[in-house]
Length: 149
Image 1 (cartoon, rainbow, N blue to C red):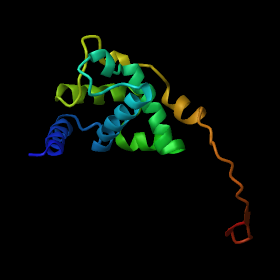
Image 2 (tube, helix red, strand yellow):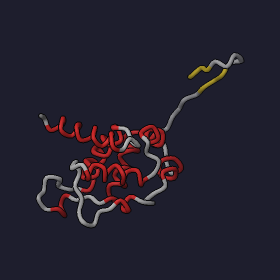
Image 3 (cartoon, rainbow, N blue to C red):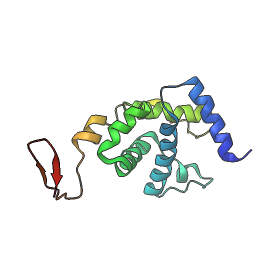
Image 4 (cartoon, rainbow, N blue to C red):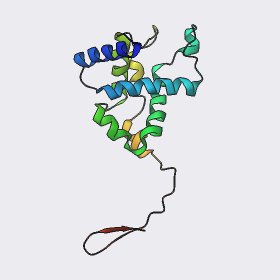
Protein backbone atom coordinates (compact mmCIF):
# COMPACT_ATOMS: atom_id res chain seq x y z
CA UNK A 1 0.00 0.00 0.00
CA UNK A 2 1.36 3.42 -0.95
CA UNK A 3 2.18 5.94 1.75
CA UNK A 4 -0.63 8.30 0.71
CA UNK A 5 -3.15 5.45 1.05
CA UNK A 6 -1.90 4.75 4.59
CA UNK A 7 -2.34 8.44 5.46
CA UNK A 8 -5.83 8.42 3.98
CA UNK A 9 -6.74 5.26 5.93
CA UNK A 10 -5.59 6.90 9.16
CA UNK A 11 -7.54 10.06 8.31
CA UNK A 12 -10.68 7.96 7.76
CA UNK A 13 -10.20 6.48 11.25
CA UNK A 14 -9.83 9.97 12.72
CA UNK A 15 -12.98 11.18 10.94
CA UNK A 16 -14.95 8.16 12.20
CA UNK A 17 -13.90 8.93 15.78
CA UNK A 18 -14.18 12.73 15.56
CA UNK A 19 -16.44 14.21 12.91
CA UNK A 20 -16.19 17.85 14.04
CA UNK A 21 -13.87 18.68 11.15
CA UNK A 22 -13.92 17.71 7.49
CA UNK A 23 -10.96 16.09 5.75
CA UNK A 24 -10.09 19.42 4.08
CA UNK A 25 -9.20 20.84 7.49
CA UNK A 26 -6.64 18.08 8.02
CA UNK A 27 -5.18 18.57 4.56
CA UNK A 28 -4.95 22.30 5.25
CA UNK A 29 -3.03 21.65 8.50
CA UNK A 30 -0.49 19.50 6.63
CA UNK A 31 -0.10 22.24 4.02
CA UNK A 32 0.16 24.94 6.68
CA UNK A 33 2.81 22.89 8.52
CA UNK A 34 4.88 22.69 5.35
CA UNK A 35 4.35 26.42 4.71
CA UNK A 36 5.39 27.23 8.30
CA UNK A 37 8.50 25.04 8.16
CA UNK A 38 9.60 26.78 4.99
CA UNK A 39 8.78 30.22 6.43
CA UNK A 40 10.81 29.47 9.58
CA UNK A 41 13.66 27.83 7.67
CA UNK A 42 13.16 24.50 9.43
CA UNK A 43 14.73 21.31 8.09
CA UNK A 44 11.85 18.85 8.32
CA UNK A 45 14.11 15.94 7.37
CA UNK A 46 16.68 16.63 10.08
CA UNK A 47 17.31 14.02 12.77
CA UNK A 48 17.81 16.92 15.20
CA UNK A 49 14.48 17.73 16.83
CA UNK A 50 15.41 21.39 17.35
CA UNK A 51 16.08 21.85 13.63
CA UNK A 52 12.70 20.47 12.57
CA UNK A 53 10.24 21.10 15.43
CA UNK A 54 7.48 23.68 15.14
CA UNK A 55 5.53 24.49 18.29
CA UNK A 56 1.81 25.22 18.48
CA UNK A 57 2.13 29.00 18.50
CA UNK A 58 4.50 28.94 15.53
CA UNK A 59 2.11 26.67 13.65
CA UNK A 60 -0.84 28.93 14.42
CA UNK A 61 1.07 31.90 13.04
CA UNK A 62 1.87 29.87 9.93
CA UNK A 63 -1.79 28.86 9.67
CA UNK A 64 -2.79 32.52 9.86
CA UNK A 65 -0.38 33.57 7.12
CA UNK A 66 -1.09 30.59 4.89
CA UNK A 67 -4.87 30.95 5.25
CA UNK A 68 -4.75 34.62 4.32
CA UNK A 69 -2.52 33.82 1.32
CA UNK A 70 -4.84 31.04 0.17
CA UNK A 71 -8.31 32.33 1.06
CA UNK A 72 -7.95 36.02 1.84
CA UNK A 73 -11.15 37.64 3.05
CA UNK A 74 -12.97 34.30 2.70
CA UNK A 75 -10.84 32.58 5.38
CA UNK A 76 -13.51 32.68 8.10
CA UNK A 77 -16.10 31.30 5.71
CA UNK A 78 -13.83 28.45 4.63
CA UNK A 79 -12.92 27.61 8.22
CA UNK A 80 -16.59 27.61 9.24
CA UNK A 81 -17.42 25.18 6.43
CA UNK A 82 -14.64 22.92 7.72
CA UNK A 83 -15.94 23.11 11.34
CA UNK A 84 -13.14 25.38 12.57
CA UNK A 85 -14.37 28.19 14.81
CA UNK A 86 -11.28 29.13 16.85
CA UNK A 87 -7.58 28.52 17.30
CA UNK A 88 -8.31 25.69 19.74
CA UNK A 89 -9.87 23.72 16.88
CA UNK A 90 -6.44 23.60 15.23
CA UNK A 91 -5.05 22.13 18.44
CA UNK A 92 -7.71 19.44 18.30
CA UNK A 93 -6.86 18.66 14.68
CA UNK A 94 -3.12 18.56 15.37
CA UNK A 95 -3.53 16.26 18.36
CA UNK A 96 -5.89 13.98 16.41
CA UNK A 97 -3.04 13.68 13.90
CA UNK A 98 -0.45 13.14 16.65
CA UNK A 99 -2.55 10.45 18.36
CA UNK A 100 -2.87 8.59 15.06
CA UNK A 101 0.81 8.74 14.15
CA UNK A 102 0.51 11.34 11.40
CA UNK A 103 2.37 14.11 13.25
CA UNK A 104 4.93 14.18 16.00
CA UNK A 105 5.19 16.13 19.23
CA UNK A 106 7.65 16.78 22.01
CA UNK A 107 7.07 16.40 25.73
CA UNK A 108 6.47 20.16 25.94
CA UNK A 109 3.70 20.25 23.33
CA UNK A 110 0.06 20.33 24.42
CA UNK A 111 -3.38 21.33 23.26
CA UNK A 112 -3.03 24.40 25.48
CA UNK A 113 -0.42 25.75 23.03
CA UNK A 114 -3.35 26.43 20.69
CA UNK A 115 -5.61 28.23 23.18
CA UNK A 116 -6.35 31.94 22.91
CA UNK A 117 -3.40 32.72 20.66
CA UNK A 118 -5.50 34.99 18.49
CA UNK A 119 -9.11 35.95 17.93
CA UNK A 120 -10.34 34.61 14.60
CA UNK A 121 -12.69 37.49 13.88
CA UNK A 122 -9.91 39.99 14.60
CA UNK A 123 -7.13 38.45 12.49
CA UNK A 124 -9.22 37.16 9.59
CA UNK A 125 -11.80 39.92 9.36
CA UNK A 126 -11.07 43.16 11.24
CA UNK A 127 -7.34 43.20 10.42
CA UNK A 128 -7.77 42.05 6.84
CA UNK A 129 -6.57 44.54 4.25
CA UNK A 130 -7.02 44.22 0.52
CA UNK A 131 -3.60 44.68 -1.02
CA UNK A 132 -4.71 45.56 -4.54
CA UNK A 133 -6.55 48.61 -5.73
CA UNK A 134 -9.77 47.97 -7.51
CA UNK A 135 -11.01 50.41 -10.09
CA UNK A 136 -14.44 48.97 -10.70
CA UNK A 137 -17.26 51.35 -11.44
CA UNK A 138 -20.81 50.10 -11.31
CA UNK A 139 -24.05 51.73 -12.29
CA UNK A 140 -27.56 50.53 -11.62
CA UNK A 141 -30.47 51.25 -13.91
CA UNK A 142 -34.05 51.68 -12.74
CA UNK A 143 -34.73 47.98 -13.21
CA UNK A 144 -31.90 47.12 -10.79
CA UNK A 145 -29.56 45.78 -13.46
CA UNK A 146 -25.89 46.43 -12.87
CA UNK A 147 -23.49 47.73 -15.48
CA UNK A 148 -19.80 47.38 -14.80
CA UNK A 149 -17.59 49.92 -16.52
